[in-house]
Image 1 (cartoon, each protein chain N blue to C red):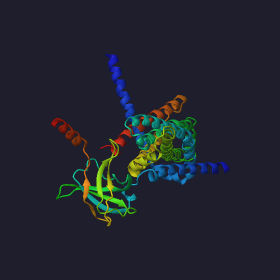
Image 2: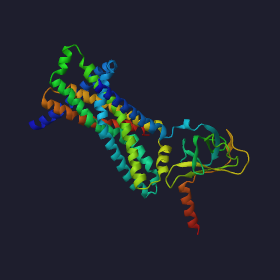
Image 3: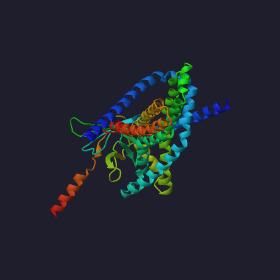
Image 4: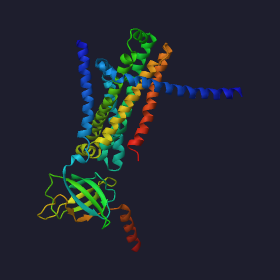
Length: 262
Length: 152
């Protein structure tokens, strides 16, 4: 009896904790929104963060994009050649990359590569009381530390996603046209004919901007609110990767349903 | 100072590369909607347009020369009136050209194929192609085939 009550109570506490987490993240987001524009008074800081989050993630994004494109090309060719439609390989590769895989996979990789780094950095600053020291010197850490990191991640994700898709399409071209002998003109021609600038490329870009904002928010929040201990830092970093991955995938479904559904 | 300048350069390149990737995909690799085909309009009435839709290609000898702009029911004949925008480059289509609706491949998208006739005058803005052939509906072909078999 007591054990049953206990487990129900534990469930209740989990729900309450979750609600509290979501609520304080929302409050944090509002607080952050106030400093987003003033942060641009120091563009150098943002630039530094675009470098740390974006440029340094280029290698993993480009290599992953290339391999995803190669695999899509192989699998697509196998399936499409059953229907004598291997000319459509280009569209299949391009649309799956531009609409879905580009924004989503780039965002997931980014959360693992750069989001966790942002969280760890901010959490360590908090643990070693650097944030408190900044406040002592009347420097707003939201503006000098959190804001630039948010912008850095937010700017980097859409750009990385675009490059991911581009490299993926080239990867599909390599495997499809160069190795498997799909007609080169119809690979590009079909892409040209069926990919829409606004609906497909624009839709993918909107998605990746949203993913960038979500990952950036989660990363800085988890770092800022981390428990100032070694294990607290570890938990915050894990939480960033887990939460941003789930948020990206969930948000992706919702956005796809709105943009491409019906 | 030097390090900072290097970082600035690399970030600048990074942003340019990202924007360039988006632009290449949006402007070069995709069809750019109706605005890309600036041209003249012709119409054609079909008994059945099948799966033809706005933005379907209009082809001549297999090459895309225009796009379907709108499809409406003609109020008197109850036929589907298809309005097409043809690229200005191809302004010498004979007036007795023939418009067919074909399917690309077995399951592919449908398109309008123009077969040029022999007339000396050419189609102009607002003209109508009178000779048309409707989309082939797979079900009706199959049922015709079955009934013919049954008669034998």
